[in-house]
Length: 123
Image (cartoon, rainbow, N blue to C red; front, side):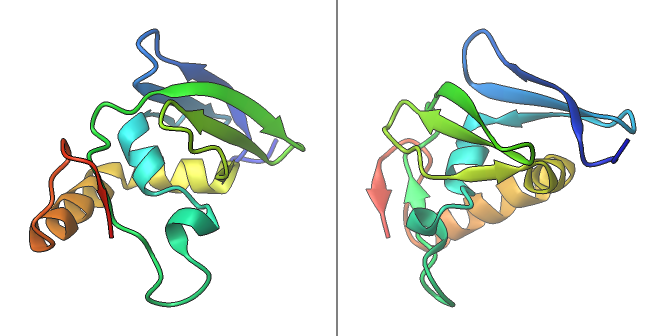
């Protein structure tokens, strides 16, 4: 079995995190906030260099739906209406493995822009 294939995807009862377990035994509990602000969607990442959006005020965002996309990904729907990100197994493994670094980078970008995790703003 491919190590990037999840054997379990579980939404927390409070919908604030997603746990993904992989065939190699790795398991990651990933905050909904991080999944939202790092969404692989064009809406967040843009269509080219320098177009990435910095999303503030997403600390309390929740996942409201998980839908399969073929046999390689899921589409997550968030309570703020975002539903265009397709989260591949590879993306989920990667963000899970580096979530502490990704969250620190996100917080640093917010601070540099004078924004925070609690007050909504898009830049």
